Image 1 (cartoon, rainbow, N blue to C red):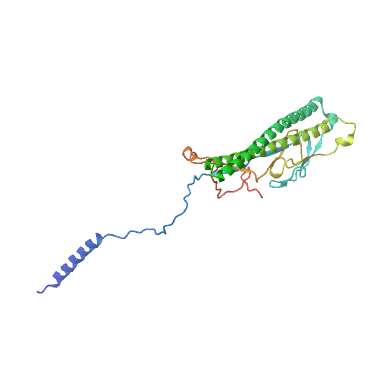
Image 2 (tube, rainbow, N blue to C red):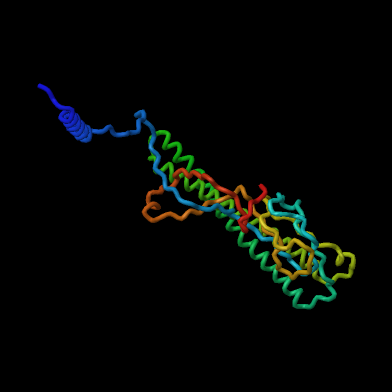
Length: 278
């Protein structure tokens, strides 16, 4: 049987169409990711942005009116209680002070003494609570090691111990500040009271740091005449931080007391959003 060239071309063309149709309907391979199956812990997290802040801050203010000498401290400088000089003030002439100024100085002394009297019992209460929490933690730990206490009881005892420890630390800080303010107020009262010894009236009034930590902010750096109560510097301990994180209600109920917290991609900033030097 002989075929013409035209017939052969049609046969080849039809065969090509049939082949293309068949190839189009063939199942295609699917791209997949390959991984090795393994066993391991599963960690469920609640990821949110937050900010850290120093727990206890203290603003050093001028206890009396006078001329402030230039403050040499800068943000980030380390301070030590009773050693680091914060500021020096040249008091005004006591002969020019009226009865109202003296009464205000005496009132500051009385207020500082009252604050110290309140801080004493609070510190003792916090100390007792911390000691009790410590004894409870030891007792629950021993029971937990003998399988006589649950995991929840052990975690609650640990959390209570840490909480009471932080409360005691805050109370101790308040008591130290109250004692410092009382000493400062008494010293200011002596400088504002008229004395027969004129040499005492021209001495500089020095203010030293009441706490250990660093300078967070300098409110008044240059020399100037200021009034009593003017803010000079702000102090704090950058090692004593707390974290504030806003989470949704549906996520908040999943967070249990004592859960592990991971801080990632954090940057220390000042009040003005400028990097601090430490």
